[in-house]
Length: 308
Image (tube, rainbow, N blue to C red; front, top):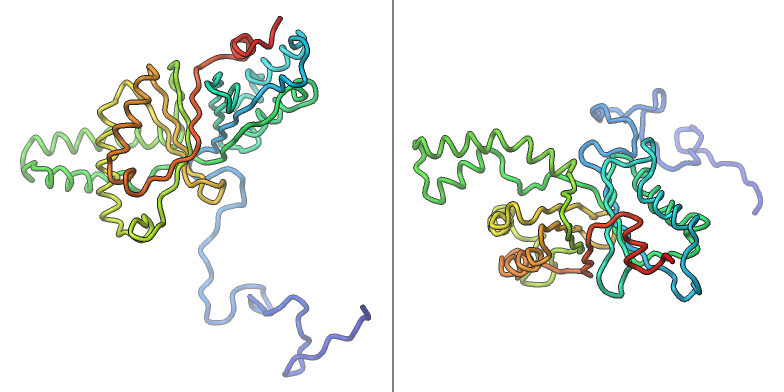
């Protein structure tokens, strides 16, 4: 390609080599007549709300093994799942998993994505990484759903369900909800991992098929269906705890569902019951399920017969 002189633009000004101007020629600001944007947050990898969430699942490469893992490699594996204080993410839990899809899984949460991914990288580092292969993963962030009712919306819902608008009973319910709401929202954004033995993990989408397109339904209808869904889940309070994290724009599925159970039977029951809610029965699309049982690194190695 030969260099050619830049042609002059009309009015005698040099033409820009970077396309149309998006700001004032003299100041770099917005064009004349365009209101400047409000101040923007500083660029950051840390969400303004919520945490990064990583679900990672792995298999041991048994086809490469003709003997148990060495003591050194076992120690490296355990250290990867129990990092030192400065490397420890805000939340970390590991599980051995049932079935052939994976041998073990890890869920990690932290404001910084580097701390989340560091656990994954430690498991694939030279040494132990020779004997492990990734089976599946999901990247998401925690959030407060748009369907979580405000205090006023909660009051209106109770009235629709039959509470008298001026009754002391209604006032007491609304007051209790107002006190609980900040804590509930904090738990959605910065969730604790219960020390319960069983968990299941699965991604999901909302349907876009003709006649059942979630994203073309009015918010009022979607809100009503999600309220029904939440009511079904409340029947399992104290038995099942859940985290719904968002993969929209981050992974192939739109949401990741994590359910922790005091007993695996409760996981089966809540998923079955909620399948009958319209939000699931008509609009839910589900990906692969992984079921795990809480275990530290040594317990995973022993369960998977990786030690001598």
